[in-house]
Image 1 (tube, helix red, strand yellow):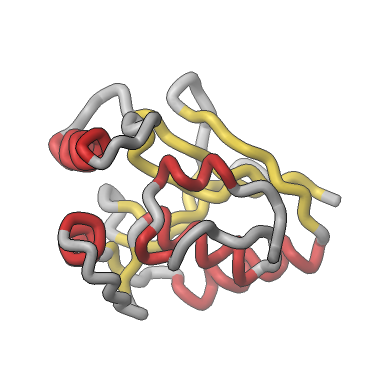
Image 2 (cartoon, helix red, strand yellow):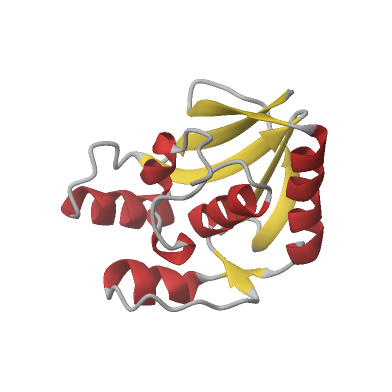
Length: 153
């Protein structure tokens, strides 16, 4: 078994985008509204959909005090599925519209060609059989991924 980390980012710079996300999460009552981004992490690389990077990408990540994580144990086959999921979606755009429609208006819409970080990570770990996300992927917020525990039911 190999470790896959679900990274949770607390942005200390608080860009306008992070301020919007953390303020909305605070309004909704999230205990950890300061977590504004998530990735899955394998061998020094983070996989996610990022507003800053324009969508789905793989990027070398240096972990520092702004990152916290949970660890899931994965087989080689599951690691392969996570990488396959990335290859299927690499370069797809960031779904800014989803932030407004799903997170603010609660409309529960999906765009198969665009992703937000929590939707991407939740879908990837489900695709790999590593964990079941608590809700429909497009409705998950970054702080909710703290509760992934490796159960696939």
